[in-house]
Image 1: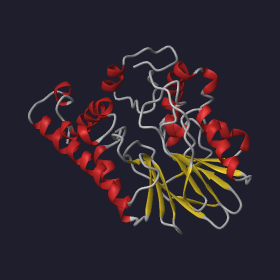
Image 2: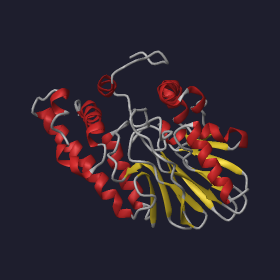
Image 3: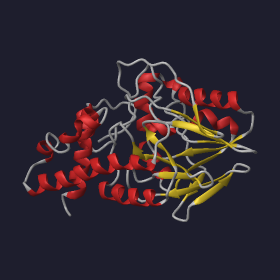
Image 4: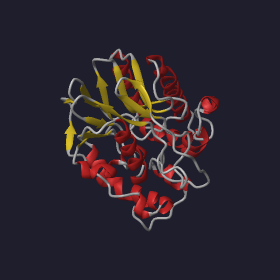
Length: 314
């Protein structure tokens, strides 16, 4: 499939082609900006809208926010567009004048990472998984062109690459009286998922390794995601900020995601065993979950396609 600013492809073709659409624009929705909520002392989060990106919402669909230390500010994540990132930066400046020294790019999807360009003048470290640069190199300009078709080129800004890469050894930042640690995950939601932990408070930021209420989007490995959930749950976090859903949840929130992914795994395996083709499987696999998630009809078929491709040659 050719990728570029001139590509005009149907949503179904993109789904079957394996390209994640969780952040690409769709028309027909207008939304007002919402504020940030202080969920822990010095930690502010904006709940993303449970919709797809559209002209009226600036791709403000992910949970984004910032952490204020005694010396500096860290942004996690930066939002879905230049406009969304500028909104977030304004929210930071309403709370503090401390320098913005770190911006987390939790993974490749635009709804989490395309606001980073709003922070270029701050000259922060842009922190990402060691595989993020390659993922953005392969997809970034395609994502940018699709977003620009809806929001206008001036509202999107350039694709920002990580300037600090986190590998298997992990990493840490000190904001002054507040240390945050990073983990680069094996392929799961994507192949470049980064999570962050505030060890002192037990606050975990798994980004899109945890979806709550909004249907998950599989763009990496189904089996890998289930395995990474085990590791995240073992951290013993007190409070969790999911990539989508309420701004803060308890650890048992992993249960719904695990159930959905398990249903997806087991029913896809059965479909393969029964000789169903992908087009047949996407009509039946996971349907029992449809009342448990928003945007289910938009994403379940793609999840089944991804799962089928992964499990077909077990």
